Amino acid sequence: MDAVADLFQRLLRKSGQPANDDLKAYIHTLFLDGANREAGLFSRVHVRADDTVSGFLGVLPVEMHFDGRRLLAANCGTFACDDRDSDPFAGARLLRDVLSGPQDLSFSETSNDVSTDMWRTMRAGVLAPYSLEWLRILRPAAFALEAASAKVSAARLLSPVAKLGDAVLRRRGGKQSWSHYTPFAGKADALEAKPADNAEFAALCVDLVARFPLRPAWDRPTLEGMLKHAERKALHGERIQHIVRTRSGKPVGLYLYYGNPGGIGRVVQIMAAPGHEAIVIDCLVRNAYDRGLVAVRGRTQPELLQAMIGKKCAFLHTSSTVVHARDPAILAALTHGQPFLNGLAGEGWTRLIGDRFG
Image (cartoon, rainbow, N blue to C red; front, top):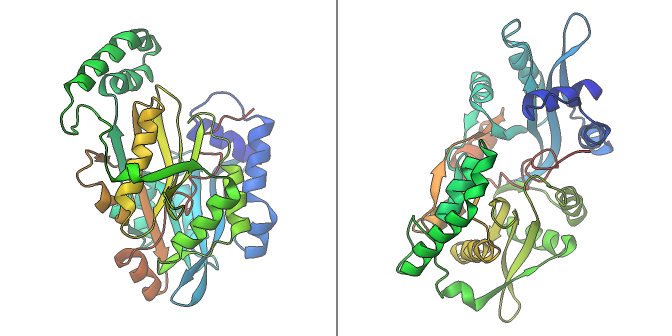
């Protein structure tokens, strides 16, 4: 674990500092706990001739439902490989070894271009509707400043100017546009988005995911455990975990995102009852705006992608959702159906994405 944590810190976190005990302990908890051993799925390391670790592919077991069957899936998330010049095929060997395991299907939602090419050589498919990031800009001047400050910290000194610019745009009013967001009255005002604890949130997730033909076989204890992991994402900001209900109290959707005033919100999950997707998205965006965020972004899913048309969202590709299965029926359901993937059905809930260790 020490070697794997150092590899993660150096290659994925781009840090010159050695991994601390908090990161080492968390990687041990995530990849070496009882659930992984019981499922028979294991993470893999690539070892050099001198017994030093040069690569790691983290595997999380996920039970899934499909066509009345119970499937075992391998969530292949954390993938880091060193020595690309001296041993360019180390990553491919790691991936091939994992894909030859006992699972019925394998997937990753965070595959970069290099990893995606490796998956494709193993006859994996890329799910295009799941492989986009959506972005809704709420305060354009402040958003531009926040983006610039990631490279030039002194840019934040211009914050008063950005606030003035956004105030001018806001006073223009009019319809929604790429240049600004205006919280108009609408159907979302007939709903209430309120904080939910992990038990309430998990119970509704189980209900809402049931309509998908290929989906995680979640139970409430499993989901509550995942949401416990998701309580800490210090790099992304405050956690907002809401259930959206009608005035009569009927739940129609939920969302989980992170963000602080002046920052960009990171959405882990949006779920909605059929026909309520657009309204739930409106509730999330309004909440982010009211809390002072400059923009909000998240991963696409097909039913959400359609609901975002007309909401002035931009779409970009940063990583791919890739899938692999030996059974043609499962592969067809993944590539031509609408499986429930990404977010909580991926690795977005782990502390490895968005948290600060130590």
